Image (cartoon, rainbow, N blue to C red):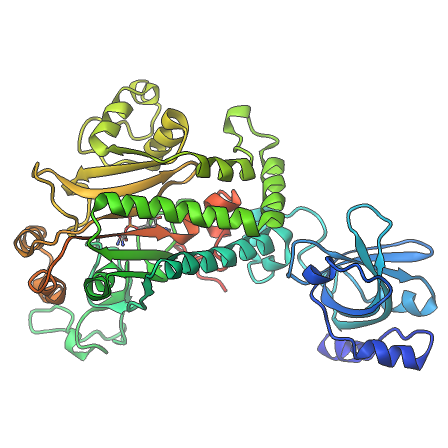
Length: 505
Ligand code: 4AD
Ligand code: MG
């Protein structure tokens, strides 16, 4: 095959005169996104990209070419003659082309401009017998198995562009507000969330693990001389920086070895964690709401073509669903979040609402709420957001027992200054809190939970020296992208998902 395509590189379509061919060869490539905006018809252009579809009739062939710069394709018009017929035989969905031609106004519907091909070079063939992506609808499950090629579909290229825009918007939001980006470590010796859901990092020979006299693993011989793992959160190190720089944020990969095969959990995901000195829980909530609204507005202002495509895709997907199971229209859903303030209420108030709710009374929740202290599942979070309040909700002051050790303890001795931001279709999108700034209280909590002081001494020291009230939160980046794209499985909003029993690509 490689040899065959080697020969094909030489196949190109030359027109009228050598001079014209030479001239068109030196025209620099224009990305389709920009070419589609141009109106100086008659000029020579060069486009490069991958074939989406080819339609040939007796006199003319149309090729839809996409280069990923936009969801829109460039229509190539190829006049049929013996030479072009020969080259068209090598052009199928997935093939890569470089095309010299003339920019023309398009008479067809659907696009304003098209390129009349003068010279086509097949850069890389795609054998239709083997190429898995055909110009028809493929299931998302099928495309997950073809993740190495799924960027070449409209859906996954749209998601990739939205994802990029959101990375940029997050950095812009924080930069414009005087936050410093901090790179926190990926390999750590501590468990920031205290949940024990960590991937171990080791260079020990697993076939022959060194043991101590008491039969335990002897980590002295391991790479770091002690147990190491991939980080579950950059927060603890983020706090160290905030207690000097005032306002920082991290945006890094995060790893959780929780064996939850859900549509909202990944083993490797990206988290944005701002941390602010002198912020209390109210300031923290204000910032979280402002940030979410900012990035959603940024998507509406900058990604409308992709959002409209994703909206149509979602409506297609929902066609066969019952009316009450259909998703709200994507763009309207995003706009709706911007219009009203998020609801803010305590966990205790939420429990009261849930206990009195129909699905709880009729035991329609999978996990029926029995009383105060229950951990909220996404079905409860979504009930509050989608059915009860019909807008995003921030819940605060959770029971200490279901939250991490570092959260500020309330006077009641039962609850902590936690906050979870709950979104429609998603449930928890942000988790955060005001932090415990008192050394004594934090130390007592660490002891109570049996967290080894040896892994936490440096964190504790910040409460000894110049401790101040401070707060922060973590936004799950893929959950944000789920919300923005209307996709329903988190495996589809990260290019190469890592989930239990799944490590391909
Ligand atoms: O609520 P979490 O566990 O909070 C923290 O890690 C804190 N250290 C954050 C902080 O205060 N700086 O995680 C924060 C967010 C969740 O709300 C969720 O959006 C996302 O991270 N998240 C996951 N996303 C995908 N897959 C998983 N397994 C996730 N676990 C959490
Ligand atoms: Mg959480």
